[in-house]
Image 1 (cartoon, rainbow, N blue to C red):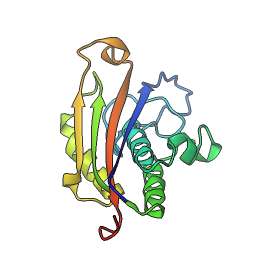
Image 2: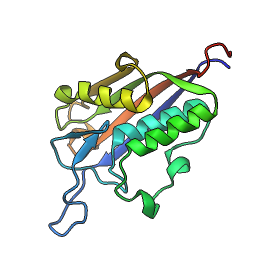
Image 3: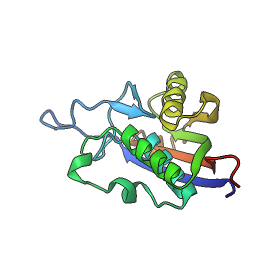
Length: 171
């Protein structure tokens, strides 16, 4: 088996909350890290970074996508920690004889500023994937105020994952 590469993309709008909103107390979570800012709208914790990562991992393995892995709007995933989705994807990779070589993530957001949180995100993601921190790159950029993201309406993430044989002796 050779190396495999996959990409993922996820986008979430910021949650428009009302005082009686069930999600009003939900924090903004990016890359498994709580970041100061308004939460994103979504069925689970809306972690756009981990969602894009899962799609990249599953795509590289030829194993579908996040929706196929955990479903969309299933009651059991309401408010779920997206780290559990990453763990399920890693288990799927293992079952296919694959392991993560490295991942590269680009968060696209006009707000909040993310430079101070990138290292914590990389550390958390490396732990979820079972790889060295150097195998995880987290970058952040803006759209220079262009489009919905540039207007501060939401956040996107693009992920690329390289998978390698879980047993290097097998190729």
